[in-house]
Length: 306
Image (tube, rainbow, N blue to C red; front, top):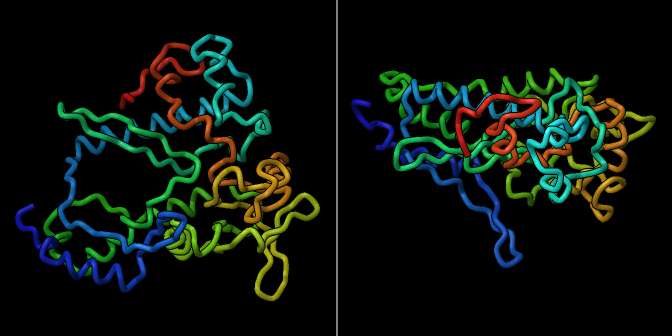
């Protein structure tokens, strides 16, 4: 970049972030506090060739994760072929017997993946962690980039930057692809969740309904959204932003007050899609053993190592 024009507008961007209420919540000593999202104008620059390498490797990894989770909860070839030890799976706190044999719509488990990357001193990239359960954070670079464009249009005019403005469209396309017939909703625990800004922002950007568990009900093996007038509207896909164990008190944590009773029953029957699928804890940080050792169902090495 010839000139750091954006750097001179750091304060402007931070003021705009505050004006738009871009915050994240933190709990400290059992007290909930909100904090403004801090913006740093100095970017980590990743060249086009390196970006393409990462993109290819991350796509490969997510596909491997999907295969791994599908196999664990179905045929278990990876265990039969001794690629992964049996105890590696069944002793894991992420393994859920309730999810055995459950197939998600279109066969997709991780619709959204948050893969943490680190770069070593030698310049090589490594996977630090696979976040598949409720990955968050996409909204912050989305709105920060939007405000950067307004504050310093010259930066984007004079430099070629990868555009992230289509994220909401891609997310909506993903939700529509697996929709079983009905409205699209984003399920939030509510105002005091740490990522509530993101929930509301993504709902606005994708045109989805932002709902809490009390606004959804299961009747006659289908899910319905109760609108402001009390009318029930069918729901075909739920982008869940609540922790796994609180999703359905009839199947998992019975004390949950923020989930939807029997939603997992109709998910089993294929009458609603969940993003991400419910049984993903067993897939987090498991791809290394799955992809880097020869065996079924994958015989390939992962491009980006753990």
